[in-house]
Length: 292
Image (spheres, rainbow, N blue to C red):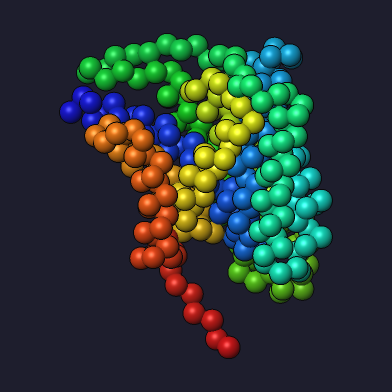
């Protein structure tokens, strides 16, 4: 029982990170019907921005987290403005190829500027731990789960109860009509990229505190797994990204506990294939019929 609870805590930590990054995928898909394959590399850029702020400016954790989210949001907005907006009316395949190209550019830009070698991330949170009923709970675990849930609930509130959230839902429902209602679609899309990139940056900082070594290609595998989480829950659905992230985290932790750890990544991609075959709309998604 103790081991099960310990693994559950670890799963919540991992699932919270996946969910934060998956939200960026699902938000962009909701407003543009675009899978932003560069999103995992936005997560990586956020981690390196945090490294600069923590190492050279010596800022504390909260300042590093907030500034990294803001600066990475600017990176996401720049990517949207430079790479995606000119192709908004282009064939879908052009956008997919561009997204892959943006990811490669970000990886190699970071590699060229800071080097390919892994970098140690400063420990910004004291690594204390408590033993409760035989279960060890670390302060970093509490921090990651708490911040992840807080940011997810905040996003849920923004989407459900603010004018910006209403505009996001409107553009996801019908992008052609929203301009006739006095809403600027470009502004809404820009805000969506900013929020999604900021959440990915938060995930980057939290990962760097849990596993304090970062490198330019760290966003590839984590980015794909966050994409799997978004598809699992229902791509385009905020709640789906949250649910999918935690389910994937639970699956990986328990697979690693009872099977060889090398199976963990394979199981994640097997989940993607099964979901696409059995329920393409995801666990929370519903098939949509279109009249022609």
